[in-house]
Image (tube, helix red, strand yellow):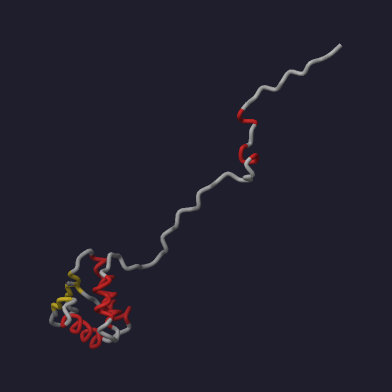
Length: 124
């Protein structure tokens, strides 16, 4: 007596395409980059403006970059400076004032001195 085996029913679930194609693990997209903690300078910052400020020499570029940092914080090109600019730059009040006057003479900012306080600055 002969017994016949029933053919197995075909199912797509029985086929492992990754194994057939030589891929061991299914593709997983790379993780999205996470934002680094800390402060940053919000742009856009005009490169020509920064180049002109840096060409004035000394720590002028540092103060100019800090001015753009303040613009990013406030969202306005007119900012009121405070003692933090001196702390971050490591400059004295006299040096900061000299640099601000230099930036104003070269047409990069408009300076509004405040008697007995920190000045207001408008970036042009």
